[in-house]
Amino acid sequence: MAEKFKILTQFVKDMSCETPNVETYFYVKEYLKNYNLNIDITTKPLKNRMIEVSTKLSYMDKTKAKSKSFFEITYASIVKIDEEIEDRKIIERIILCDVQKEIYSNLEKTFINLLDISGFPGIKFEKKVDFEQLYQQRLN
Picture 1 (cartoon, rainbow, N blue to C red):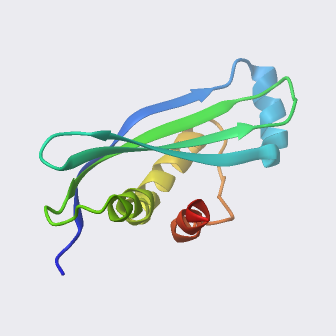
Picture 2 (tube, one colour; picture 1 turned 90 degrees about the vertical axis):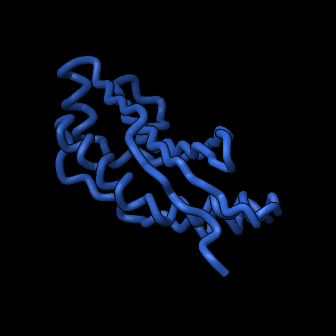
């Protein structure tokens, strides 16, 4: 069977880094270990079997700390689904799993670069995102 989808293009749609003041900056540098990576995937149908897939990464502190920075990037991928694919479950898997596995290394590299130039160098996401596992959890 031929490819089920093709990524036509991918780009940074939006990025944000918010550190309100120098006190917050120094506090966040010390407590960055409290920050968690969150992923949100949304879609927007386009014409000719194309879909805009937006993958948003947020890196934030969910504790009740008053001093916080906020980091977020939205990465868009324009995906063309093969004409023969009609099953919604297959399309859902393509969007939530297959496309994500293909784009994630570029997205993560760009996000880490944003954190680095925002004054927080050396951040590495220890746990790799397993889109296959996330997709299976969603089904259960």
